[in-house]
Amino acid sequence: MFPSLQATIQALIAQNVATPLPEDRVALLTPIAEMVGAKQAAGDPVRMIFICTHNSRRSHLSQVWAHAAAHYHGVPGVWTFSGGTEATAFNPNAVQALTDQGFVVTRESDGANPRYRVVFDPAEPAAAAFSKRYQDEPNPRAGFTAVMTCTEADAGCPIVSGAEHRFSLPYQDPKVSDGSGREPEIYRERADQIAREMLFLFDKARR
Image (cartoon, rainbow, N blue to C red; front, side, top):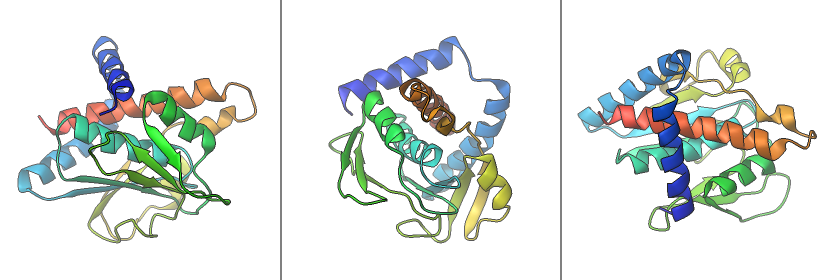
């Protein structure tokens, strides 16, 4: 794992110890952790699709951090994906937030919906990041867990076709800061929140 990302993770875990997550967030995260733990005990793979309306910010941050957190805590067989109810683009401010946290993010194509390669460890496979609908490739069509990361998608998709499990884990949209000059602060704040929660989730799943 890249040293800068390792330092970010250690700092965020220290925050989780010093300032525990709010009870309402723990209540949302615990059933997901229990699902992961049950699949681990059964020897089954864990496939998670993080879903938000535009697959632009929160769902990508969640996908990337769930992947890294599972690896950090030694939880094998976890495959993470993201998607939306419509495709737009992976927001550059979200890309920058991940870069600032220590991920290596490389833009691999141009156009309205560019593709990115996200790496947390040079010895591990990269994640392909671009905006897509949740039912589009390379996402699984069945046998996955849907995690709804925004209230709009949560309300708009009461049933996610092909999902074995469906959980609500909404985050405030950092888009509210766009054009304010506070984008680096707000996007990093949201990325750190998601990171703390994914680290908590996979730590709990392995116990």
